[in-house]
Image (tube, rainbow, N blue to C red; front, side):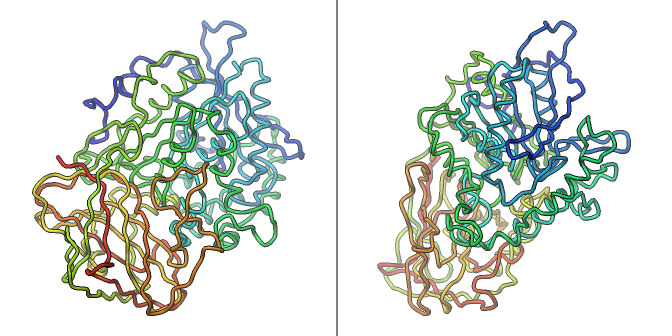
Length: 610
């Protein structure tokens, strides 16, 4: 498997080597399941797992890993062999045997907890996490140190916990998690991602209301032995759970609320204090810079723009031990997305081993040697190797390639100016093996496995075959001189490697709604070293139909080695119908791109030559 670290020299001590020196020494007991009451009276269901051993001394205290989930801390199961905690088991089974207490919590309005959800990770939830931390450190088994980790929502919840500034929270490891809910998740490029607002919304609503019939499309949650959320220990007859589920009926729906946030950080019409920042980690983490050590993990196929979120988080927490791990993974690392992975699709890299080392250092007080490692580790696709760097991006060099007639991509700008028209069709899409499927909890084994077929409907520009291997590591940035027949449109740009046999391999992509083409300087608490924009209403500007304008944006980050004899291809579309809303609705625009001359389209490519 290509992501295995067995032969890697990117670490002094690889994660697998570290794990070999940290065997399991405890067993996992039956959880103590109870309600914890918040100041507003809402009761949260929590499970407490403590390490057990026949030789355990009375009064032994443990560091705690808190896992905060909307996807059920535990299912009630009705048959043998079913894992009751499919969303939690990996943390339970990994950390408890190695000396950590683990508490799992149904966040308010979910699972067996009471209350409602009024938005996606609400400020109320954040205050709940402060109360949970207070409760943990008051327990006789707590050593006073708290960490938190988890995938996606759970990782963002870890950031919310850290942002409370609670002194016991010393380290977090958000895995495949947003930093900016607007730009990383729901509106990447300012375009509404319907996979999130529709598919994901259907999933969480089915879970919150215990509608098992509606969970059938989601293989992670549709085991017939699952019988809804597990009640807490005191709720012998399930009466309290039934009351909680009634309250959940008052929770928000993503498909209804998302349009309220079409402009970043603009208040919802019903609440002046609710905006996309108020349910984004960056909004709060910037208030406690350097107070919490953060290991951020993402992958090159991770959702809308989750890798950007991990990089921004890494760059925006000065004074702490910040680390960044970027692999060949999809959202949640359920699949190694590399076409050259070999073997099966399941990753072999031990992500939790790296998290364990980080927590051992900062929560358990061990000298792990992690501070002798470089802070950034990333996997390079099509070379299938791990690398280490002091920061991101790892290389400073960049080359510029110019769009030209006849679908060429040239190292010099053509002297003669021309144009390339492209009529958008709102049926164009990237298929159902894309990076977005996992955002709706749908499995993908082979990503972008028929990219040639999709490129046939796109406007393409390709280089001549390369003579040498060329490593692309960083954010490719495209500048388009373009016009539009409408006042607004979306532009999607894709990068691929076309090998000597003519097979096209998807590399990365980026998108932008033209209304949001104005650039901005990122705030001090949001360090982005790629093209940044505010997505604020004040900076929104319609296109003047038929009039050319400059549009610049960065694509999603990548590390990929282009092989000798291959071509680099840039492809342009005006929609991705499977995953994004139409812009403009019902009016497929004609786009026109300027080629050559003094202001033609080009792309800047970060590279390292072999």
